[in-house]
Structures are given as C-alpha cells and as structure tokens.
Amino acid sequence: MLSPKFILSLGAILTLSASTSALAFQNVPSTHSMGQSTDLIYIGSETLEDGAIKFVSNLAQKGISILENEDVQKEQREKNFRKLLHNNFDMKTIARFSLGRYWKVSSKTEQKEYLALFENMIINVYSKRFSEYNGQVIKVASARLTGKADALVSSSIVPESGPKIRVDWRVRQKKNGKFKVIDIIVEGVSMSLTQRSDFASVIQRGGGKVEVLLAHLRPKS
Amino acid sequence: METITNTTHKKAKASSFYARLSLIALSSLAVSSCASMKGNEIHEAGIIIYDPMEEQNRQVMAFNMAVDKAVINPVIEGYRTIAPRPVRSGIRNVLRNLRSPITFANQLLQGDLGGARDVLLRVAINTSIGIGGIFDVAGHEGIEYEPEDFGQTLAVWGVEHGPYMVVPFIGPSSIRDYGGYFADTIADPLRWHLFNTNKELLYSGKYVVDYLDIRDSLKDTLDDLENNSIDYYAAIRSTYYQHRKALVNDNKSISISDIPAIPYYDDE
Image (cartoon, rainbow over all chains, first blue to last red; front, top):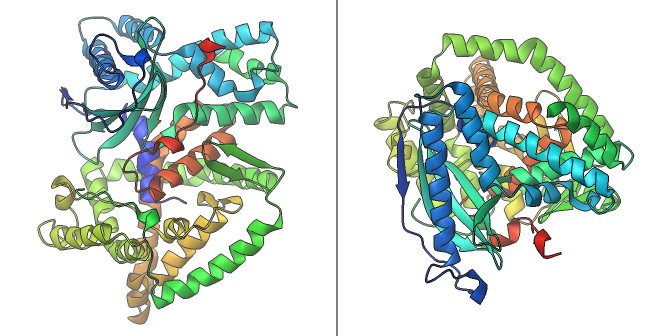
C-alpha cells in the first residue's frame, strides 16, 4: 500500500542524503531499559549500552565532519568516508548474515570472493547514500541490550523541515572491546534483512547457485 | 507523542460500517489464508512473506515500472518543477488533514485513544492556526502525524497479510492491506460528502493530487532501492513487509523480538 508513511520510511534512506543546512549534534544521556548484565560487557565501569551510545555518537560525528569538510577535495572526502565505514562496520558479520543459509553451502573460494565483493558493494552503497549529506541534526537517544555483546542504539535524524526519521543502529562489541555496526534499521526497515531477502531471491531464482549472486556482484565492485 | 500505547493489546471497538466491511474482508482472508500457507513462504525475523502469485506479481511490477517510466516519472518531474518543496509540503499537509476522519476512525478501531485524541488535536490546530491544514503546526509542537489505515487496524485485530500482491498503478500490497485500502476509500466521509453534493469531479481531482503526492514522496527512495539492489522485486517486497510491521506497531519503538537474530559468527 502506498500509504504516506510508507513513503516517509522508505524516504528515510534517501532523506539521509537530502540536503538541509543545519549542522548540529546532540547526545542525550542514555536510558537503560534492560538490566541484564553479564561479566563480558563491562569495560571498567562503563556498561555496554553506554559504550554503544558513545560509539554511535562518535561515529555520526566523525561522519558528519568528514562530509562537511570543504577544505579537502571531493575524492579525498569520499576516501575518508569509505575508510570510516571500513573501520566501523562489521563487514564480515553483515556479509554472512546477508548471505543467510547460502553461506554454509558455498565453497571456501566462493566465500572468500563473496566477502570481498560484498564489502566493496556495501561501502559503495553507503558512501553514495551519505555523500550528499549536508548536515542534519542527529539525536542519539538511548540504547538497549539485545544480546550478550549487542546493543540497539536509537537515534533520530531531524531535518530542517519535515518529520524526523527514526534510525536504530545495531552495534556489537567485538572481542577486542571495539564496537562495530552490524545493521542499520531505518523506520523499522533493516538494511541487512532487505539485503538478505534480495540475495536469497537472486540465488533461488538462479537455481540455488551462489555463483549467480557473485556474477551479479562482480561488475558492481 | 507523550503516551506510548501498545495498540495490539487493546480491544478494538468496531463501529457498524467498518465492522461490516471487516467481516467481508476477514471472511475472504480466512478462505485465502487457509488454502495453502505452506511451501513458498519466507520466514524472516517474525515476518512471514507469502507470495504464491510471485510470477504474476513480477509481471505487474514490470508493467508498473513501464508506466512509471513513460508517464509517472515525467509527471513527477513536472510537479517538482512547478511546485517547489515548501509548496509540495503544504499540499501534503492539506491532504493529511483531509484524511483525518479515516485516521481517527482507525485509531478508535485499534483502541488507541491517545492516537485518536492526537488526530483531533491536529485537525483543530492545523485547520485553524495552520490555515486550512497547509502548515503542520501541531507536528512542530510534537503532535506528529501518524498514518493509520484499515489494513493496520486489521493487523491489530490479528489478521495476517495473506498473499502478497503487486497492484497495477499502486504497487506492493497484500490481500489484507489492499482490502483495507479499499475500505478506507469507500468509508471516507469526504468522499460521501462530495458525492452527495454532486462534486464527484472535485473528489477525482483530490484523488489525483493524492496519488501524485504519494508518488512524489516515494520516488527518491524507490530509485535508491532500485539502484542498490540486484533483485528489485525481492528488495521492495521485504521492505514492504518490514515497513508495514513498523506501522502497525506505530513505529514507536522496535521490540527486540522483531529484530532478526544476527549470530556471533566469530564464536564458530
């Protein structure tokens, strides 16, 4: 159904790249809604939720400052942004999730090629989506635990005019203590889930062969 | 939005008209969903995608895309040229304001009293201070627009999507949601009023502007999805189901059971 909200929510993906003018950044202290704690999640006295909020806030701030930096050439800006994505997204996890059950039926060679192609594609997609961003207010509001090392960080992107867009970041704390993004959910739509649906359909319609997907991904990188 | 009401847990009180319509919709759904809900279902993160008519749906989508390319997209470009962003946003606000009776009825049917009150407040504020609904003053004050339709109401009542369908000229839907769209259109008091006062043409005009507004606001996102997917059909379908689910939950807060499990692959 083409309800207006459908537009908005989908529009959210693109609204990230729609240009407005205010540059601001706010970080509202977290609210802890779930108290399940395991010994794994504490670094010093900081909870996983606090760490996750800080991570998303910093990431957004870094992203904005890269994209807002008019002093460097467009190519350099893009390069910096790609590096930021590479360093802060858990590409391997996103890639494996997106391939779903077909990961296990792929050969080692296919898996290796897929991982490389996927990272390249995701970075292309996200840098395209964010590159026209000229500054909007992003409010990081709260975080909830969603797993032993996972948190869901809620934020909203507030354009200069029009309704705000709800963006939830799924982040995971890796063994070395560093946080990485494992999914972005825009107005309830998970980028990874959509990706997985897309890939599954391509492979299924291609007779269940992962090679069919790889063939589609190759020209994209 | 000050109150967070979980609509799914509230009992809905049906008014006569919607109740009758919903009975028809429900009975047809019951038939269709009992038929064969096996085989070609896709389960993902609490969402069941059931697409038994996939091949036909893909053909309709190809048709829709051809129409978009030949007619709709040029018209949208024209609309954007004639009407700059503030004008278009004013038009959108007016259309939403006109939709208030439908939104209000569905909030009530879902048992969302807070939502129903917000609709009334929005109409009162936006029609007066917002000059006939052109300016979304209420939204600025934190009473934001919340889209409601009868498809969502049916979902709150526990009705499943039934088969996925791509509707000519409209796009992704399901038996439930398309039935809901139909019910909303039929029940719209504005439609009744204009038809009873021999202003059918005015209603048709409003319908066209409505359509244009929706397509205008969807365009950039759909272009993005098309450019960044391999199987555009599957990407839209997944997005549709996820998005409808978020709408039914009033997009308030994602419940943890709704997000897909992402395994700890490093632990393997």
